[in-house]
Length: 193
Image (tube, rainbow, N blue to C red; front, side, top):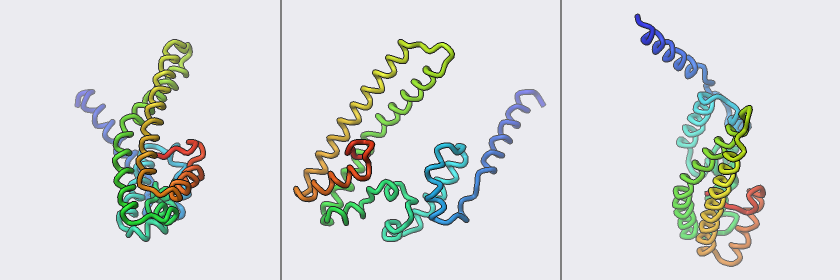
């Protein structure tokens, strides 16, 4: 075998071994998976993928009522913004609930590109800052770009909140404001899109 073939086979074997070494989360309880959620940021890509796959599999196998009662496995449940929770907390009609879900999906899709760009800029800023001889001009440019992306996201978030408010009663708007501040104080009342 030539050197290139041996290198390719070795790379494939190493890749397969890392996939095979990922934990099997199927035997974990919902509560245990929920507890582990915050630790996945530091886990390997394979571990995160195995964890996400198990959570998605469990979510797909449960009814909406069961999902709302689970111990925080789904993203929406842990954030406290599940449509079921909002419906109960705000006293939404079925029509309002459906409208809010449609708005959420629309705005989430619009913000995805900006959030990805922001994450990439933040990674670049970290890389530029961690060099042995940081380029201060490059860092300043990246910081300005990050500020612009954050501004764009804030404007989009505001538009989303305005649209949501347009289908709520005044009493529901007040409840929504309180609810948003409770679930996301670090965003100062921002609604995740």
